[in-house]
Length: 248
Image 1 (cartoon, rainbow, N blue to C red):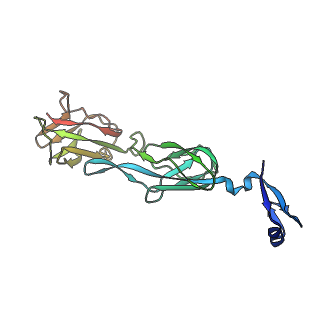
Image 2 (image 1 turned 45 degrees about the vertical axis):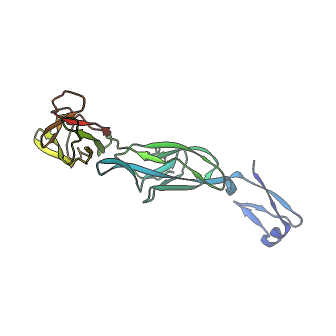
Image 3 (image 1 turned 180 degrees about the horizontal axis):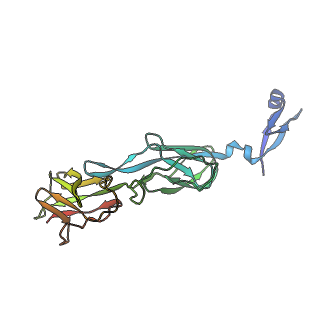
């Protein structure tokens, strides 16, 4: 059913003829009552906004920072946008209703979307939003973790390192070593509380590796609470992985 709109006599006299998509509406005297089809009802649309962040490493800790140029779209519609440099997104002129909002997610093959590739290396995000008319509605905020299953692989290995007597292994270099051939893949300096983080430690490793270890100046670091040798405990690191280590 269309929206009933009342046009006052003076507005009719001023405008003369009103045309909506080829439908001509006019009346010479009194008040004119017209039915406007739903597709012309701009009063029953609203907007949605939110923020998107991705996991990063700062001072050996995982933090979530705004990420620009990330695809955000309303599922099963033509509405989409990209986040700004501050991570915010805004989509307007959405008909009222409840929708699924997707981030970093490509739509099904549909020429009407005309979107580019999603940002590889991070998971997708999903949430919902209720669009009320003529206001900017709060949409979901997204915090995306690395997705090690995508190519190029994006991964974060982080945790805390401890000495043999349970003290924080602080201010020391620790390095990720590949044994075949022996080479250092990545390194970092532990913080005062022993925390460490490797961002994309396997970015330059070709193929699948399971023969990785983490070495320190005093010897190998192994998984805390286990009695393994430390030579091959580092399996494939995919995504966001937390592991605490101790000096063997």
